[in-house]
Length: 182
Image 1: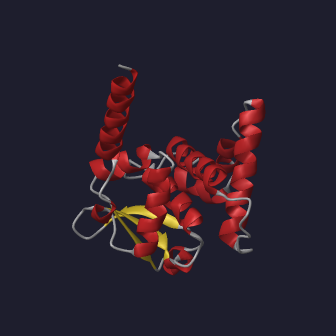
Image 2: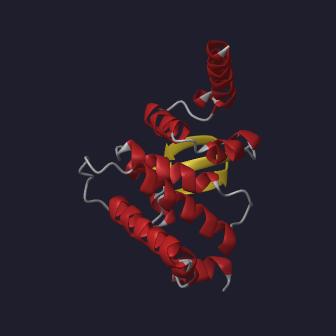
C-alpha cells in the first residue's frame, strides 16, 4: 500500500510539474533569453510567465541607446502586441542577470507604469537576484551588477525591518518623479 501511495504521489507531482511548464519559445527565439527564462522557470517564478502568457508577450534584445540609461522596457510593437525589450548592451550579461531584467519587465501590466507598479517590478527584480546570484561566481563589474547588488541590499534591508526601501528609492528618483508626475 505504501509503495502505491508513493508511486501515485510521484506520478501526480510529475504531471503537475509538466502542466506548469511553459513553451519558452512562445516568448522568444533568442537562446540567451530562453536560458534566462529556464532559470526563472526552474526557480518557480511562475508569476513571470503568467503575465507574459496572458498578454502574449515576446522578449528580445533591442538597442535602447536612444532611450537614455535604460536596462529594459515593457512596450508595444507596431501591431499593438506586448514586447519586453532588454537593452542589447546586456546581451552578453550572465543569464542570471538577464533573468532579473525579464522578471522586472514581466511585472508591468499597465500601459503607463505607476509608482506602485514600478515598485513591484523592482522588488521582483531584486528578489530574483537574491535567489539566482551564485556565491561561487564572480560576476562582471558592470553597471548592471552594481544595480542588482544595490537592489538586493535594499530588498534584504526591507525584509529585515519592514520598511520599503525600494519604494523610497524609486519615489525619490528624479527620473521617476518626472515619469510619474510626483
